[in-house]
Each structure stands twice: as C-alpha cells, then as structure tokens.
Length: 311
Image 1: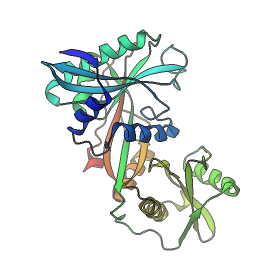
Image 2: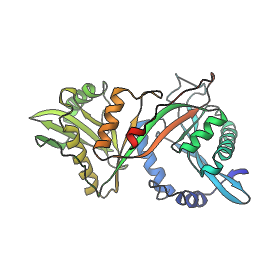
Image 3: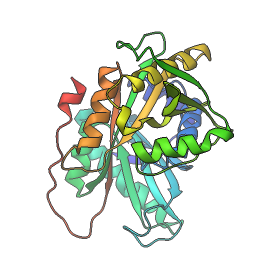
Image 4: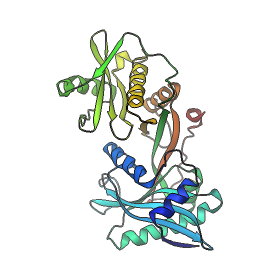
C-alpha cells in the first residue's frame, strides 16, 4: 500500500462510489462545510484544505481523505501549537482495508503537517470501521456529535401547537432572542443576519422560541430553542415545521441540525431530550461524528451506545 496525493477528480470518483447521501460534488460539499463553520463544532469550523490524500494498492485507490488546517479553539484544553491545528476528515474506505488505510492516512497527514510546522492533529469521522482503525493506531475519542437531516419533500410527522405564531425576527428582536436562548441554553449567541434568517415564535403574545436558519447550508444553526416553562407544549414542533417549509420554498433538498454531545461516556438529560425531540419530529441521523486525537495519558473510554436514537 502506498500513500499519495490525489486529484479532485479522483477523490470525487471514489467518494461517489461510496453512495454518500450528502456528497454531490467536492465543490458543493466544501461550500456546505464552509457555511457550517459558523457553528465552531469540532468537525465544522473555518477550514483550509491542505491536500486530498489517497491510499493505493496495486494501482487502485482503496481509501481517500481530506487534510485540513483549522483554527485552534481548544488551545487551553489540549495541544501546544498556537493558532492552527491539523484535521483529517472525510475518510472513505471499505471495512476490508480500514485499519491499514487509516494507519497510512494518519502517518502521511502528520508528515505533511510537520513540514508546515503544525504538530497538533485530530481526526473527525462518522464511519464505525474508521473508528475501529483509529482505536487500533492508538488515537482516542475526545468529542462526539450527531447530524440530523430531513428531506424537504417530506413533512414533520407531529403537529405543532396551533396557538403558536411565527415570524422572521429583526435586530429589534435581539432582547427577545437573548432571553429565549439564555432560558433554553444558558447562553446567547447573537444571530448573523447576513447568513441567517431567524424564526421567532410567539405563544399568546409572548416570545417563547427561536431558530436560526442558515440561508446557505440548510442548517438550523444551534438548534431549536424554547424557554423552559413552555417546553413540551409542541412549540418546538411548530418551529421545526416552519423551518422545513422555509427550506422547501427556497429549493433546498434537505434541512439539517447539529447536536454536539456534552459527554462521551453518557447522554445527559439535555442531550437526550434534544435527540429524542428531533427523532420524534422525523429527523434522520445522517452521521454520528467522533473526534479523535493523541492523548498523553492512555485510558480506556467506553462510549455510550446511541442505538435508541438511531432506531
């Protein structure tokens, strides 16, 4: 087996052969990822591609990946490199060759990054056989996230609260949005109105829920928020139905939402409620992302099974 750089055309051809429902072309995929970078999730942040890597066996490509550099938001938690770290993503390989290909990709990625003075490195992937390969080369999981999607040709299977009224928010609604997020989430991320249209939900005249709809990625950035006294009243369902209709009218084929889990070894109550809500409202799980890195202290970590959310 041999590692080498591959062309965009060869990368596209290999990935299309894997029947990935989110991959139409490399250009569109990377554009979608750029728009998702507003989330600053471990696998979705402002990225710059360094190379497209391929592993070849007897003249045939058997695995590919994208090698990136990304902002180093976790500088205070791990690593020592400063402003950028390397990130290996979108690893496509059949289970038959997973361990050998993963070894080649990790080794080659670190060699390429070292020539650029980048020593801190992570891998993000959603294939279980790649997780196994990373375990075997000695890397450990450090983050976990779930990507849900809805086909816009479908409908949300649950009815929303009929007393909820929803409209687009403007800058004058920032105090209401701040109150909603702080009560729902404990913090406030202001909307970027150049990239997001904001749904604001009212129940009997009171602003009680919101969602940031990314105009370019089809993603509900940071999820659906409802103030706690009004949760479990189908207000979030009404927001989801309005969001799906928004994306359908604008020609999107899919709507997404990302949930970054707060723990690897358990699903806390907040994550459990969110995962069950999106599933009950017809969301399908496109990918369970896991982030891997080298750890100074090796320890066995048992990740909780998310099977009940996939069924």
